[in-house]
Image (cartoon, rainbow, N blue to C red):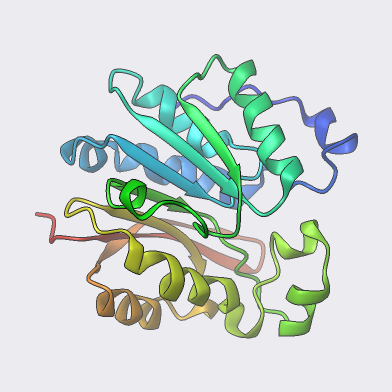
Length: 220
């Protein structure tokens, strides 16, 4: 997939509280590119990126799937992130990406969510104290994950995942080993998602980044 055009000076100006694309962002894009055959096989119509930040993951995926009549929705707690996502989408001539300011998928209509068949989430996964998550600003909250780096991940599993009821739904989640991926897989199974596999992993400094894929039904 082509890397979207991005003005990095934006992150030094108005959007300095938005997470700047980094190694984990590009790993996720690479993982989605590697898994395009699987994604195409479910014939997705509605995708949600949680914690969209700059929006480049959704933008890259939208351009790769431009032959499909898909809608993308990016959510973020940071109003500047949502604004920047819309700005990046316009710069890359992507017209099927909408945005909303919210935590995870809070407040989104149940009827809407039952049609979501593709979910992408690069969560705050770095191991920190829980206090650092709750007391930090938007930049800190974009990477600080609390105990085992799982505070936001566990909120996602318990609050958002049960609301994705499409039988073909795929979820892509970025984690590190300290997040205990196998335990995450067990938690996801409780809500009807199979821990399919590690799509892609890469060492970055002292972290082993992984992109996990979960599916509503077992994939061949």
